[in-house]
Image (cartoon, rainbow, N blue to C red):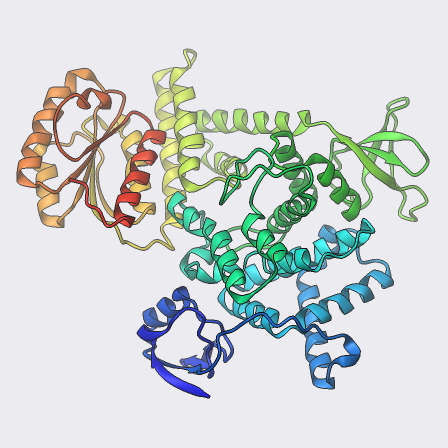
Amino acid sequence: MTKVVNVTDLTDGCILSKDIFINSSVLYRSGTYVTPALADDLSEKGVQEVSIKNGKTTVFHRNFLEEQEMTAHQLKALTERFQNDMSEIADELRYGRILHAEASYKWLRSFYLRTFSNPTVGLLMDSLKQWDPICYIHSVDVFVLCSLFIRRLHMKMPKGFILGCLLHDVGKLYTPRSILLKTGKLTEREYEQIKEHTLQGYELLNKLGFSAETCKIVRSHHERLNGSGYPDHYAVAEQDRDLKSIAIADVYSALTLKRSYRSPMQATRAIQIILNDCMRNNLDLKSCFAFINFVHIFPPATQVLLTNGKVGTVVLNRNGSEILPKIKLQERNRVIQLPSDLSLTVKSVIGWDSKEILMQEKQNWSDYIQNIIDGNALKALDLLDALSDSKRIENVFIDLFERSMNEIEKRTDLKPVDLSIARTTTMSLLNWKMLKLLQDRKVEMGEAVTANFDSANEQLPMKMINDLFAINGWKTYFIGENANLAMIGDLIERKKAGYLAVSLTEEAHMFKVFNMLNVLRKAHPELIIFVHGAGAHLIDDISIRGIMTSSDLSEFVVNLRRLFQLKAAGCKKS
């Protein structure tokens, strides 16, 4: 039975009973699981009515079919699905020799078919594939990696764990597509929304009746050894082998597959990042070594035991094969190339020297600083991309833009012209980055005026404030130099701005700024004001309502976070 309902009346858990078309193209197919995010997407696209199934609420049916129990049509459809999915993920450059053995491939095929034969699993994965195709492929990849990993370790296949691996990101059905498919970096506020997928997925699978083990994996796959993960900040214990395993497979998959916001990373580089996280006690080193031995891809600086009993260290080989690395033997410091006939291979990884990656990071930072000073904007941009990998937008501003300028301005060996070039270069980098960052932006926070009271040479800090407003949902108006009360008041009046950010760098300017803010507050009682700069906290002791002060970008971002929390709670800053 089906019924037609208004999109505004859709409830979480409805199932579409007919395809939805827009301009002769299928938007969502029959059988799609409806979430509030999907209902919002339909409304935004102008869809007013849909057909849904009128019957029992979806529940987890625990029937999994063996191949001999499937109809010919089921077997054909699932086999094609398996082949299509594997063509997306099973690249030797990231899978090594995992699937070289025919027995492994046949076992995986059979295991995949059995898992996807379950109607509830199929429903959820089909829905995820339509909602976010990249997330779907990533989910299948984690499922495949963990399944083969468990088999390689000769452990009993825990069904609840493996289902959790496949469905670990199903909560992203509740995340707006504008965030999931964003081509640029996420803001902190967007990242906070992404993080909700762990709890939302847990609640969904718990409601449908999945096992506690499956629900645990979906809820806790982003938890870390040191408690720095989410959503519960749970410190993963020694006995939590399942969480330690999926955490590494999840990170490896995310780094080495194409994402909406970046190209795939080389497997060796991804493993280096994972190893670095192990050094920080985020991920488990023992599990990481087991995973490296599993994929049989060894990055530079890993210490390995060869099949002939000798010990060595993998060395950087930019033009060589990641599958056949060069090894610097411990004895005599001789470097050898592993042969293509596999007569000599790596038996296992036994250690890792983190100094190389730390030295490379320091070198990248030093080169970035020097290119800024020299005015080499294009070279600086390449290094900026490398340094900003995996950082939220706000952290790029704090850790890279602000930190680099602070370091440069403290140097005593530079002349004023060097500082001017560095500021100009950084401004160019900001402008280039903003062109991309603003592509997917939605203006939802209102209008903001940003005013710099100093000269054009000193406008960079307020330019960063202005840009952080812009990427977080404000329409901004930037007065880059020598702002005054008349300019600011006129802009606030004409643009109906509800937010104002002004600079206060020196104590001598405090009373000028204080008097100006008093005038603006009387004219605009609801105006929310930010004061930013080295002298901003001088304002703290002065009673003016609705003022947030910050001396650096970290404090400014904290103020933004407070503002978002107030907005989310339906409050208004007064």
